[in-house]
Image (tube, rainbow, N blue to C red; front, side, top):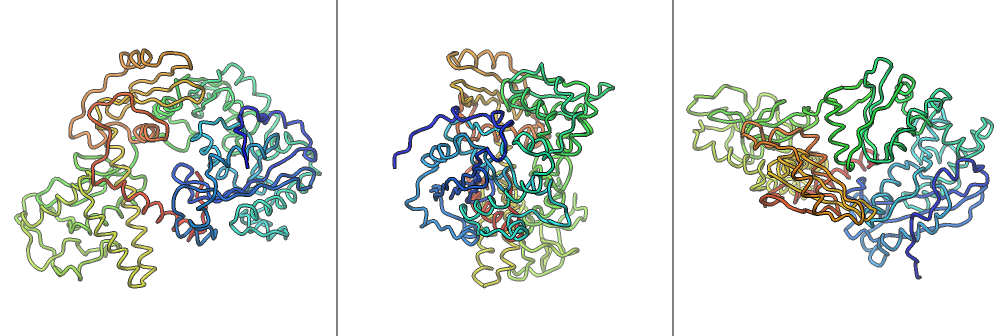
Length: 591
């Protein structure tokens, strides 16, 4: 079959459908199967779609997709799709244009649309194709709005299929699930037909509970530019109510007044707002960093996250003759983090201490000549590091006193693990998980795997952030999708400058002007910690931007790389373990 490479820009905008009657509108109900739950890390393995209009099926689209990687075992168990089944399947580069042709002139519908649209948008972005479907309908949102909690305690597709007694039951295969979603979608539309919902515009307005009072304030957004930036909703006393970012300020802020954001607290915020201020930015990264800074200054009551950019917990080596790991709010010269949860930080600290044989007792040993918590010195009788520690039992228990010389090799092993110079402790822990599986102790192996994966993820994230924070200067570029370039100047983990060169503008003069005007960042001191004193959330935004596909390094002092023993090489193990936990708990992770 020959597939014509389509221009996504030719597809209709959502506004063209707002006046279209539901019975006359063509919908494409789509479902995906993937290698996991992250649109960044995972890939599509199957697309199924059904085209409908006026209650009739007009056509179907179904294909397997070669993701270019092996299918994790838990995904095979869930979907039945194996790596061998995808051997001759087309790649997404062939499939996505064909799907675009199938969906031309329609409105997309999906169950849990954020998940499916997230994967489709990411796939289009990797192919450097614009994504024109700015509005989609989600049957999860519809069900939550239309059905009562008593009637539908859960809105999983399987539960709704059971509730409506649909003819095709979901099977975790794309086409079957799309067919089931079609019937659920029709049943939900039947429920709102007598409530004045006759057009697509009526439906989208009905779902998020848009009110006339909200729509009356649309003029507040009228003067905003169609550029990336930060917006600040202000109340009657000029107080900042809410701060957010947008790639298109006008479109994003306008959405609050047409009800596209269905959160109850956002409706309340909009009712209080009297004006919107904005800060125009060169690109999305600059907007994200500016948002963090403004959140830290204003701490608006309607923002629920990032109001404290210095938050987080750290796992730090104490400055004692017999150092131990402790969980603290402040990083030290030898520390790992940040970790969002204190409980997770304590768990990771316990795993590392157990693997290295570091003490977990809290006795003051600043001037002690030895450490001795009585216990067995035999390795097979020591507490398993992948099993939670028993209160009062020290991880460094022994049958004789330990001198500083005996103990320091363990401390050095922890230092090498945190810095990424060696992953020998991770290797030993991984072997322990494999041993439990070989002994058919599967429940113990699952618990051990979960603890190890959390430790790997914490180590890998800390090492990536540290690599960015310790570079004196990094200049990177990303294509803007329109033939131009976005540039970022990073100094010791802080965004020191940002610029945008439109198509046809010579890029290097723009880079030099950005560098000359960039903020000066002083070299860090050891006491500032591994992130050089920079806010962890800011470095996290920068790190994601730098390592996304398509980013190019223009210039860098030294080199931007991870040590040879960094935990990043265990990324696949940690991702598989997380997917297994999600599958076991029945949670489908959204991007």
